[in-house]
Length: 86
Image (tube, rainbow, N blue to C red; front, top):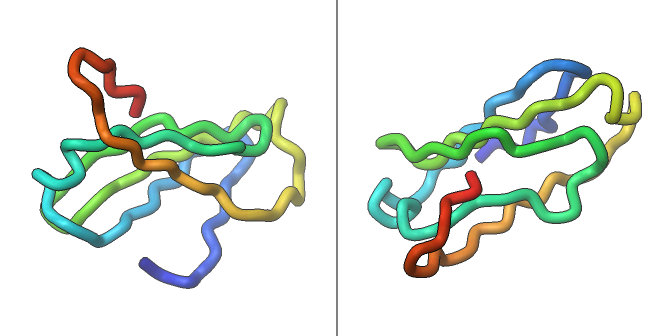
């Protein structure tokens, strides 16, 4: 993962790729944002051969322009019968 900051454009989507373990490893977990700023959502999290791909969306009407900080993606083990929130 790069140390370069990620910019989210109002009304747009941004893809962040995280290298890591195999797809089989990531498939056992669900991904969700923890304490995300208003207007920022994780719309998709998929696993590829190189790791995890996270897709963030920024609602231009709810997000505050110039807001800076860290987005924390929580990864928790799936439970039997649980729906994947992605």
